[in-house]
Picture (cartoon, rainbow, N blue to C red):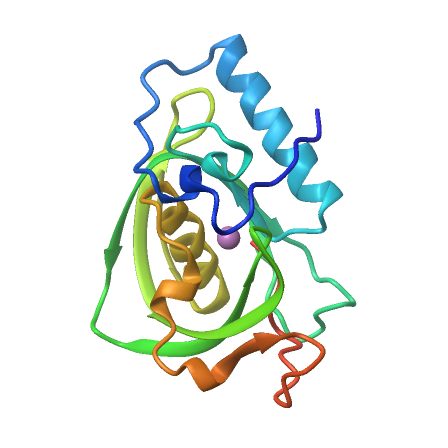
Length: 177
Ligand code: NI
């Protein structure tokens, strides 16, 4: 089922979400199906459960090569529950981000370039990856949602935040997540 996506200002986007405690259940499968359907209907690169009002630590993301964002690297489609993120070094890189909960806007956000993340899929199988670049950025953006953090709070230079159709630095590599 496609859900409405909560928008910035909704207090539910500010809550810390609870861990998933049961895997391979009809309830978790239904949540994940709804997240995927909602993300795809919105042409998103990712979506976190709190964005549809469900306070659980579940995110979905994935990004095939997309003609709308010709410069963006593909990211494998992933369902990630109870993620733990560890930056692999102190390197931060600025990149343009958008969010399905902040429609029409883009901001330049610093993120760790190299990231180790772990978690579980819907069946409870372990996920353990070392990634970089856009993949690392999407994971950090999505997992921030689980702690009630929108990307707007991470922007260091608010002159690099604005409406997509007004920003002079055309952010063609950004997709909403
Ligand atoms: Ni987002």
